[in-house]
Image (cartoon, rainbow, N blue to C red; front, side, top):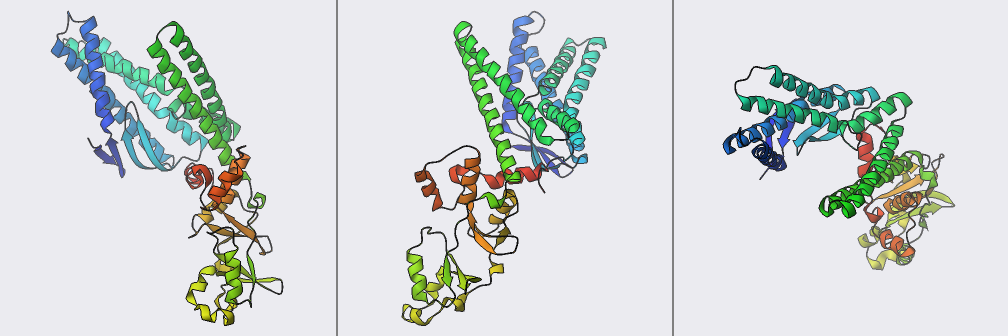
Length: 408
């Protein structure tokens, strides 16, 4: 079953995932069973299913209705949204850009709980004060009202990406002036809460119900792991923003005299340690005089190597993608991802080459800052691939930081 686009507003597609229909059925079945057990003398099986289905449909539809207003507020606060997908009791927004102000995030976080509260109270009043001859309609309105009130309370719980969590960290950001303080505080609350859930799950496992105890225990494990991941994510963000390229251990430049012939070049290539490093830098009386790619060997016949000089193929240094050693690490990663082979020349403030950095150098530096000391064997394995070690997705993290407005 494929996802279904129900409408498009402000250029944003609103999409229902197949899971939405699954939860519609499960809600309908659960409510109808509850009615059969508690009110079988009032409603027959068909009426129970009607109440169950309409209650579920109107409740899930109200979530879509609230999301429209949430989207409007988000757009007014500078958020750029690509699409919105409804899964279970909420929606996942695919965003290109987040709101950059604390007050704007507070407005965005509070709109859905307020709408759920207003909808619940309105329907509750209507269902109790309205003079309905049809008990089925009154029953449906009352149940949709209570479900909206429950959703309001659920959304206000300060956990992870729920509106309550976003609201809490945005309020702390507003009063403290620091965006990260709110995130760190929220993560500590989440960690404490999931530790309590873990302990409660162990208690239930041995004293109440093995099945529910195991579910609660696994939920606690999942939450603790999620909190730890968020903590690591915050540390990586801080490393990328604070650390400079000058803190990295640079790869030494491979040098060759500008008047060397291709035989000398071939000897240097045979002794190189990194098979992916294809560049050599020319020196002329102690001064840097451009660079070459070792692939130039293939363009000249071996018979002519002794009378062909590397300077005939040199390129000026300014054509090699370079960065100053004073820039932040995230900027260096931005530059390195725009290159063809993942190498950056590092220059000092006077524009003199200092060395080379690649994805390996940056990745192992970040891991070392996180306290993860890898064995020499693992480091050597990755050093010949010029990839970020252990699958650490630094470019994706930087894109998320840009979307949130943490960096420009």
